[in-house]
Image (cartoon, rainbow, N blue to C red; front, side, top):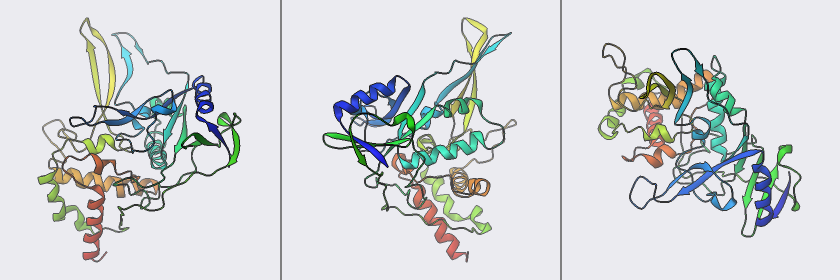
Length: 333
């Protein structure tokens, strides 16, 4: 691939050029915003300079919160009319890693190729371009190699920051032809992870009632953090907000939801499908590794390991899947 090696000054000018047509989102360090005292949070934010972008650490949240905001107003209403919010004209450039590009493919399946298209997601998705951030080494808890998401070609350009220079490789014409030394480059990808998964193809029917799930009723506290950091979770709930100064006017919002928290499956009459954390953990894991694959042909999980990173009870999805594999072997599958 033809690329360019630029000085950081030249790259700054390049970003200024892009900002005329794109809004840039990348992982940044939010100092003191972590879950515990004196800890930081790494999340996607709008950026303007190379220095703001965090390349050395895995972000705690994925780029999903750019495509699907945690809280999104779908429309405003009065007693007679409704109006959708305006959509920003500028395109969006996301700085993402290979696993997160694969995660957007999973979101596309759910919101665009699973029946009727989600118009709000589609409007945002059509504006998205990807800048690939290389992974020179595997981060803790990643298992992208086991999920075949460690490599991708679905990016528009990639970036490799060096000590004094920045190397970029452009696949999309929008990002080609700027100043700098011409070089031949290819992005690098990790080829191994310390954490490895063995996902059995066939499961015994008894897996539904297996005793292994009961462990999670005693350990999981149902906080839902595993869902909120997951780049492929797609569930949300709806809220109608009525304004205090006019009870006939308001807005409808959709808000991220999680199958791991109380109330997610509550129905009229007091019914609930999955009351225990054991049931919820079984549903979540089966959905990520089996139910989704039956419909779309590949696993929903991309192996970013954020669920394992964030769990306050040190519950590991990777370990759970390996336990399923052991159970299946013992059951003769």
